[in-house]
Length: 181
Image (cartoon, rainbow, N blue to C red; front, side, top):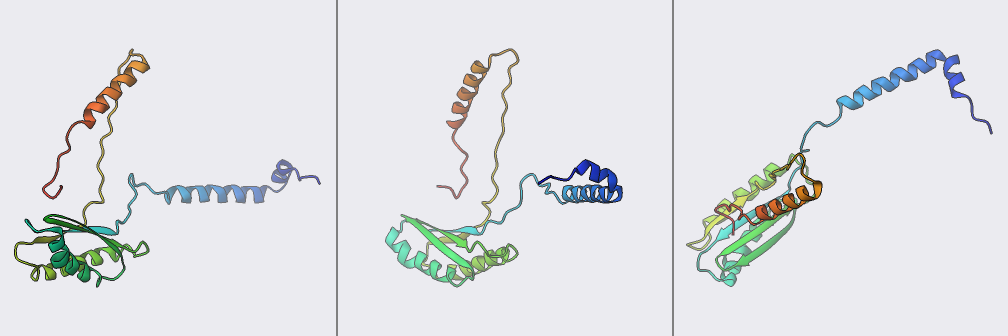
């Protein structure tokens, strides 16, 4: 089977060749214009954390008098996937996750529903309970990029110095906010 000579065909059918060339250029321009330009592409986090504190309470008291009530109210919110509760003396955290296929347009409304239900439930919790507090602002991640240069220094010494600096930075204590443990 012989394959047709494409060069001869392109010369012979100039109009068709020009049409496909223009079509390819237009498709390339369109693809370039439709290309995403965000440095960090947007994504929707479909999770939040509900925290409640009850100084002096045992985990059992927290479970029966606070967490069970909060979980029951959270189960009323649509598109709920799961609730993971962690309880320690005086502190309870509930991680609330919504279904992956929940439309991103509905997520702010769902977060509002959670806040509203937690605010309604706060009045019926035992005296001394602090919260519940809803945290949905943990999607942003910050980082620092550092470069080390030393003209004339051999690469193995530069690498050794960079690793020593990295190890010293890792030992710096992290700043902790008021709600971190």
